[in-house]
Image (cartoon, rainbow, N blue to C red):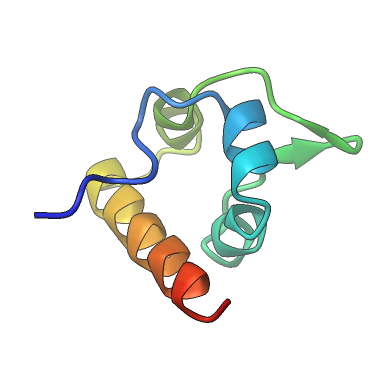
Length: 74
């Protein structure tokens, strides 16, 4: 099994800096991770909990798949 690129304990600031396309993925899934031009100061897991995401691990899995696909397109 492939090691995940992101996990629930990753800081949003680190996520946005390392994987800028994650912003598009999260936004398309109804999650705002940027406010007033700045990344939120929390972890991905905390943000998904705050946004009442029903299955945070499933969304993180989809995010990892999305990011891997973006890397293959380079």
